[in-house]
Length: 313
Ligand code: RIB
Image (cartoon, rainbow, N blue to C red):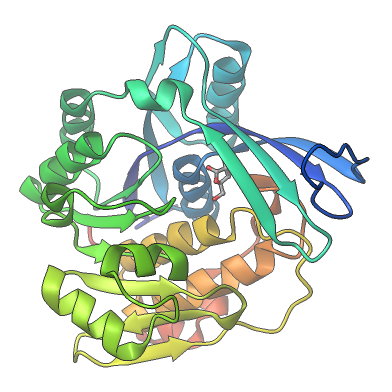
């Protein structure tokens, strides 16, 4: 595919063990689940796959264990055509996520980082420099100093940096200093901004002013809020859909938004693309396997198609 941007994801991989119970069990209770899926996850890997499905040239930078889950994850990236030349293997377990999804699609997740915690800042910086991407994506499922080193290398090379600060945690100021875009959900935003969980326009604008970053807050079924260049917040609604599994929807948003930015779409169109892909994904079970396969960016965004697209690379 011509003119496709190169994106590096410096982030996590997990094997998702997803149970679909009729309700969550009470303390000390065992219940029967309705269904089970073993799938590929990890916020980093999910975002890499979404960007790849839209057409980006994607490289994944991560550490995997020396177990069968590591082998499976390498093969999964090969299947998608994601560059795995900067994946390293370390002794011990790969990352694993135990996930419960209730009938209304809401999820509860416990991640065990395993090999993700063995990533090394200098290796990540070297990988980003070697890959020379237009855009680098990070999350909070690997040590923050690794993301800081990767984003610093990206900035030195003129690449755009996009941080999805998930799961919710406090952010190292050194990392914040090298973020161009920060994309939390409402819970993560409240933690970072020390604000109410409502993500009001004033809270979003104040956070962006204080940190010098561009901000998008994802709002689940309500879409997303983008702080525009003019300092005003624009809310982009999501289509009404019947959600059966929301796992990975935020990752579909981040991967698609990053793709849109790197492809040269207007940032509002990039948010629309993210909302569209996330809304689509919640209608199918699973994580990566729920992501849309057939989204044509030009078809999805008529005004982007008529305006033409630019590439950052
Ligand atoms: O965002 C969803 C992801 O969070 C899952 O794939 C799971 O692995 C955890 O990382």
